[in-house]
Image (tube, rainbow, N blue to C red; front, side, top):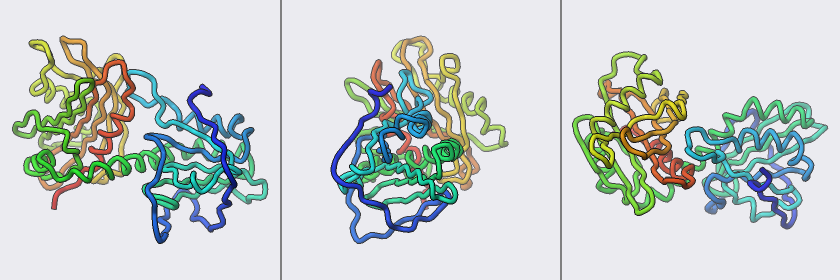
Length: 338
């Protein structure tokens, strides 16, 4: 387990002297110039006060939640890669890291406190500082807010990816999506439209070693039951069987419900106030192909259609977390065209 994490050391600690805004809210701090943030994909740099914190319950609870396996992948991969550094080594160089988690155990603190900053030293960047009077209080507060932390860091990762993709938009694919579905999406130019039909589009990126793809499909919205996991999977399977054939005759794409049960959650940080995200594995019926997928389902109020955008990866025997995160960024870039 220890091999996953990197111990870093360098110059002096710059103590945070600003008064932060409390209780998990995000404040955009205005600065004269924001440099581009640094750090590898899906990495969080944890700043601890000493090595004992990283080895004891403080570090354990951080690893338990932030380095847990990403659900719906063929091979185990953590949601985030964790590196850690002691505060005396937290030099200006490390201030520009994209995702920062700062631990502050202060026995004089009157109560636990969470402070969150967007683009504080660099852009895009998420800085979260957790202050607690004891390690026990830190662990309790971290557990209660772990899902929020994951979503905040995931959002910053999406923003980094989209900052690269925006330079190639608009293009033929984004224009095709706009024309058919009246949706604006940030899709890089190395994707192409493979198939279209009424209420359906298949977008692909193909290389010699891997494939990434997007399926967009819609049906008339009738009832909230269409947001159930079973309904989303059934609708996805129907469109896949009709439009996404496999390599062998009679084979077709479908959702795997045996090896990994699809997992759904409600999301509120989409272009709509309510959407359902589903993660799991896809497979090809009648063939030996498969991989992870991520989909988001929502209602388009302009057409009263229920829309699903699904991203999938095919990369046999290789890590796929970061490739799926790229598709996640594309899907979450969706907005209604004006």
